[in-house]
Structure formats: C-alpha cells, structure tokens
Length: 117
Image 1 (tube, rainbow, N blue to C red):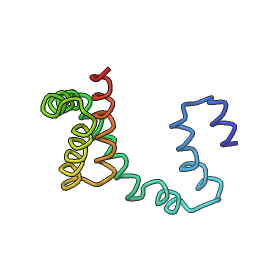
Image 2 (image 1 turned 90 degrees about the horizontal axis):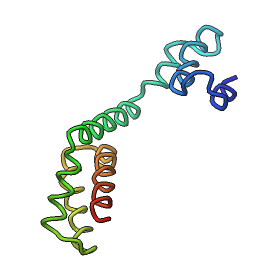
Image 3 (image 1 turned 45 degrees about the vertical axis):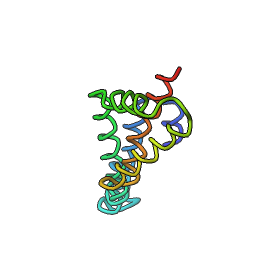
Image 4 (image 1 turned 60 degrees about the vertical axis):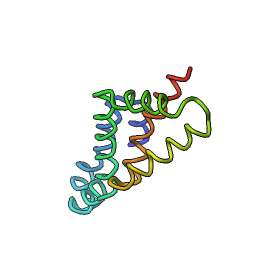
C-alpha cells in the first residue's frame, strides 16, 4: 500500500510519509508512542533545524554575500578557494553541528560556482 502511494503519488509524498504515524496505531501494528519515537528522534530534529538554517541563509542572500566576499578576498585560484572553504567550514563548525555546517555550505558552494561561470 505504502509503496504504491510513493510511486503513484495520489497525495503529496510528505503526506504519504506521515500515513504510518496515523495508521499503525489504528491498525494495531505498533503502539502510538513507539511510532512517534521513530518519527521524532533527535537526529531528525538536527536535520530539520539545519535545513531551516540553510533556508534562512538563502532567503536573506547571505550565501551570495559570503561567496562574493570570499572571491574578492581570495581570488579565483583553486588553492585559495579551497583554503577559504576550509577556513569558513572550520569557523562555522566551531559553533554549529557538522550537519548544519554541511547543509549551510551547500548554497555557498553553488553560489561560488555560479559566480565563477
């Protein structure tokens, strides 16, 4: 049933992903608390929070400002660009989780590549 809902998408995929949260307790497959524990683990919240941070970074165009500053200070040579990314990753990861740092650097990297082209 779930596989056909994923493939045929009669409802959005996000809704399909939440079907077990409602159906498992109703059908007696799993306890509601156990199902919720699988959906709302700490790891999921780290990813969700990281995506919110990255989305906020993109909404205010901070990724473009950082990439333009990075390119203007370091130039276009690959060694210095890599050095700049290493330093910015280091500085971000001192106060954020590695997941958040990685997700936040993705739009920055895409912006640098777009700017170079």
